[in-house]
Length: 251
Image 1 (cartoon, rainbow, N blue to C red):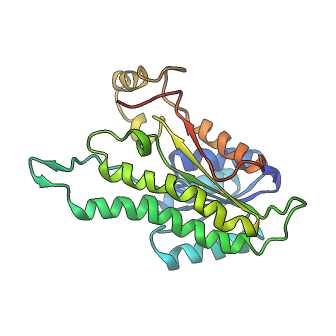
Image 2: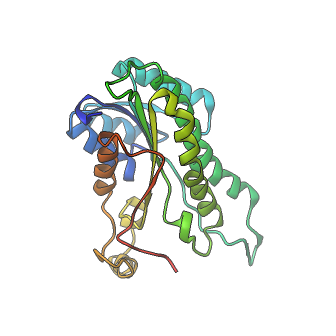
């Protein structure tokens, strides 16, 4: 697969890793449809890159199905799905106010894990209808985990569990979809300069960055986008998780 002939849906495409991926894909000639809950920002980014936008709740089946149908109609087909939508809560299992709120744990898993699977499964149905390339390829799904899936910190029980689930479903999903010529890959980013971190004071960002062995800095969202683009084009990558973290291992 080549980026200049790719038609991609990107969740969380209005900001952070999703926006960076959308901008990179579009710069390489890909068609892009952004799926996000931020309508104003999503429409703005889509207009800037010459793409499309649809308001989407990744946890809702009908919302995602409508988004997939819309994207396929606007772009002619769907050959790539990149799941970047997600939330991160910092709540300890027990604390001064009692146990971790169960609804907060469920919401994190619903958005990060269930939402990613929801988009992947419905996008896969659309991709399976594509005419195969010479090597049988019909599409690729890229999910977003985190180094927290392996090195979860205090207060990350919900987040780490949701991201570990994404890691765990990578290989079986790749095996399930092999018959349809659809690859499944996962990127596990380290500490990236997304809007959440970019709003922190410079000294705080520097403190976070100093633990990264090499290069000793926060990751740039554009690096995630370029890796996603490489995965699309490298057809022998399948069923694997790639850590993108500068060799950072959280303690």
